[in-house]
Image 1 (cartoon, rainbow, N blue to C red):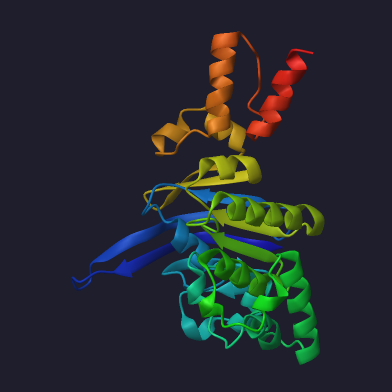
Image 2: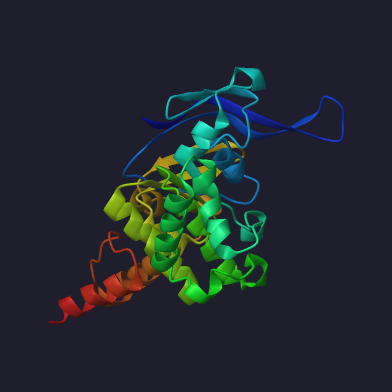
Length: 286
């Protein structure tokens, strides 16, 4: 059980009466509740964010149904289950962390969701402190206002607020956008470790194909509001599909292509970052 889309469409109204923009067009998609690391990719306006916002019922479909851990989401508001049940299962880390922060202190902000989902004050506090440590949020920051933090610190606090209540699925909308490389790597390595050790499903939107290729084990490509590819990342970048859908080939694959062509190597695309590539090249010369 996880998240399942059945013939889901979503229309946004325009300034003209009875004229709509199609954001999702008859989407069918199944994502397991565990052990998936899925990247949603595609050019701007392809429908990625709209699709993700249906995954914890921030948006309701215009047509079709979304099944979120047995909670059936329909176009009719009065027919939907308590959305609190859905959002306890599926946590959403937004692209802009300031949209999620509102409490007086960092600690209270991290505790908020846990208390909202029924944890006691003490349990929520304990979870918040543990999560802050995992994310390397300095103890001195916990009593400060979240609005006095740097962008990178705010991003970590927003993420901590989601992780502290332990959802089954974590949605990440451009989690590294605007961050310095070191902080971005820390955050992605954290989610990778969470995925490996807890088997949580993680769903990622990113325009960074290097990041997608390194971390995701499944890629869903959207173009003009439809899913045009759903499968293995090696298959995607071994074909012309990535070009047809305005995606950039990951740098590690560009390096592999160059080495294979210029040096006569036969390196495979099952190498996911530059460090691993260097190790493979060294082995060839041992």
